[in-house]
Length: 625
Image (cartoon, rainbow, N blue to C red):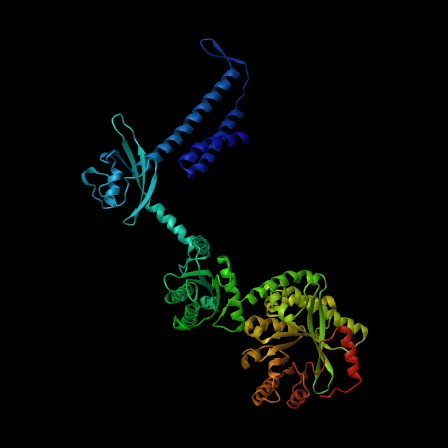
């Protein structure tokens, strides 16, 4: 039966598991063969059960008693075999331990009475000379004052020795039994595990685990002055990927070596994250720290030569100090990170010292981030629309969609404040889709009411463009809203077109084939080449508002703006100037053939109802362009 097969297999495999685990399969097969042969024989025979049987010379026995006797004998034999095998393994393990452990018996004056060969092997390995059989005569470590049953570890000649002492009382005097074990392999394994746990495997610099332990030590020692430098490198991942795995690791090791060249031995360098390093400076004055930071910026921005290439990276450094900026050593990294972020917002290859306002901004950022999701559910976000005028006709042909957030808890919040937060935490994908959907539904409502049709423009974040489902999301919104895609305009920033050029080109082509009008927003703030612009299926250039400042009085500004307008026309694109606030600016743009104008000179962003009123009013009068 199956039960018999399982029982036979288990009992046959229990001993095998102590001998050789590779024989388990064969034990199962053997048990199966024996079981099948057994039942084959039983099937060919006929049995008649009797309660008594004659064993020998007419002696009768009860068969049930015989069955239990056989079961008992079988079980006893199995237990005996099991413990025999286990005992043999224990003996072999003990013998192996004794073979590698040096055992010495001494009297109370440390004279060696007996010693096994392993002890002398350890002595030879350490190149020691045990003079006149005195155990302590030439040992590189002091064992005289060891207590009974105490265990100590000693290092000598790159070897680690474990020594333990046991009192072996004899009838005549006190004797000591010493055990010497070479634990070098064990120590090497421990050191390897320690290195893997507390050091970066590429740069061999301390990692954040070691930093946490070091911070605990500083707290215990009541360290008085600690400065933290938070160094973040830009384009490091790109540089490493372009070099390949091996050369990429070599590159970051060279970068780590640059840090080592600048700092002193008492300072601590930590490879905190992939592209982030920390430096902790103890008991340094402010001028010394600033001098070191200047050296770091100079050293780190020097090109590194690899594979016949000159590779440069940019860095930003944030600085915090204990106790100047915080009374908690554990907060140093966080505050230095805030300072680094402030520095990176201004420019690359800069540093910033922590200020209290940075922490206040960070706390507000956290509060706004937490408030975003419920704000969308509670309909705290609204859309407004700013008219865009055609220079030639004076008509309103386009409107730009802008988002506003009036929080029940925090009041009005500027898009310049909450949009970057939404981009950082990924909420921009959901928020951006909501904006497109609401704008499309509003256009459909205007059409239903019979109002003049205008193209409605919506800003699209680079984060949204990078999302795999962006095209499908736009298609779904247009389809569900019943929007005519020819009246939908998507504005992408020039910087996003540079950062995602190859993938962006394909996505913009798909959008264009849907009939969607495309414009390049904030043009002039990036570094787009003529070739780059020519490849993108863009219909309009929207010039950044910074070019309108001092336009009337600055001849250089006029020359630049005139060139941009001409560039757009050469590429068969419409050109829009935003941020127009004065009549003189309107006249200049009209004379230089700018196609569209947008700004407070005409109108601020309006609610849907106010926009319809404004468009209707403009129909009955001529706009002075």
